[in-house]
Image (cartoon, rainbow, N blue to C red; front, top):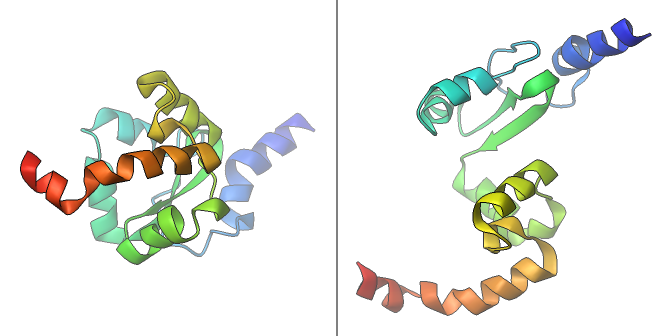
Length: 134
């Protein structure tokens, strides 16, 4: 029972049954995934190294075989973050982390509340306003 389920969760699913198994991937590391690498090194360095090696869109593993996708391709990022943002949810752990670090600001909210705050903030990010800051 439990041994079979854990074997499936930690090994079989990410390696053989995942719908993302055909994507370029970081090396599979059972249980810890790439988390140790991400924690040990300076922020973003492991991701940049893997992006150079695997390309702009690739799969990596979190704790207990959780699959994640890193997207560093501008058109794909625009599709996810702007054009079709309602189709993509932030993982709950990420929203909680942002909320702890920055309160209920733009990074920690989504949906209609996010759209309202963005609309309020947009004028501050117009080219003429940014030129004055640089």
